[in-house]
Image (tube, rainbow, N blue to C red; front, side, top):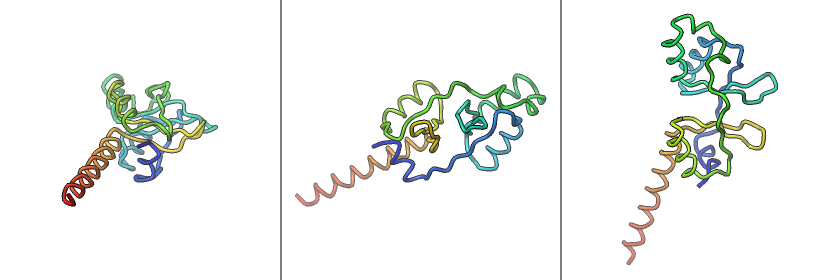
Length: 143
């Protein structure tokens, strides 16, 4: 199955922030929306970075409480690894595990269309496996 199937199930809700916003703005967004990462986009909507909860914590440890007033551009991860709607769930799971990342923005050409997390991918694969087990049980019961 593909990333598109995950987005059909969970929706395409996505939160972005601008690079000039502060780290406290990013933390407020993450906490308020109960998400683990937000995409940083420039004024034209282009992806320029990503900020995760881990980035917020790392910045505060590294720079102290003054980090909270720093612009997001100073602490965001960049360049951003993305995935496409047609990418397989298995492949994005492998990429996230190999790169030790938990979120991938989803693009369709140049357009940002969603975000998938490692949890989304694992949940999707678990549901897929449970469906297969159910089909096999039904098949075995018929015989």
